[in-house]
Amino acid sequence: MHLTRKAIGERIKDIDVVIEMLDARLPGSSANPMLAELIQGKPGLKILSKQDLADPVQTAAWLVHYNALPDVRALALDTSLVSPTKALIDACQQLAPHRGGMVKPMRVLICGIPNVGKSTLINTLKGKRAAKTGDEAGVTKLEQRITLADDFYLYDTPGVLWPRIIVEQSGYNLAASGAIGVNAFDEEVVALELLNYLIPNYPQTLTARYKIQDVAKHTDESMLEAIARQRGAIQSGGRVNTTKAAELVIHDFRSAALGRVTLETPEEFAQWLAEGKKADAERALRKEGTKKAKKQARA
Image (tube, rainbow, N blue to C red; front, side, top):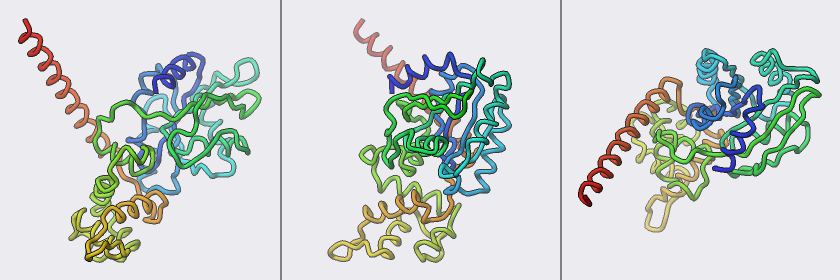
């Protein structure tokens, strides 16, 4: 993380536009807050990746949200699209109209969290395997320059998460999406949080996938148990295997077997972020108070 941050900080001086790839299913949670500190006011293009997995109504709402920001454009792309190059280049040229041509080539930095689909998009842009891809976090290891046109240079950077996630719900959403390695979270906790959001917001998807009626009457825990029974995740003695059921729920979300689902709206994320910042500030005050108390005790 430190090396990637340093590399971005050094490269940004010569960059005209910064592309940040976001997961269309969790745009706010997949935005790296460290990037805002590093880009130094550079124009930004937000690409909502995996839009074919996300709720199209919510994707449209997120595009409106981002396109209303100054010096920001937003596009929704499926990273497997055959020819997204023109849309990407056109958007960058609108953000930096003074760049272009061999004398002043466009220099673009592309960033994104692990497993957001960045390498897949780059390979599509190039028409070959210019970047390694995989379903595990952190496949890209080094910066590389990719020439999309004679006067358009794209600099790829490794996917990186920020050191501390202050928005609790973002942590769960990132884990559900696959951005966080499986060893870093409890699958049952993540599945319960996922169901807690799906029950009121996407009850029809749960009914369609798991054949469970009256979804609204369930809690997250009772829903997980019902899914375990429906899918035969039963241990000896007739006990439900909630660990196996949790794996099924997370897999079904990632693969879109549940349908096109988005886990946050712009308004929800704004509220979560405000609460997270407030809680973080309170923690900092408590920490400072503890330091002062210890210092006084030693005096």
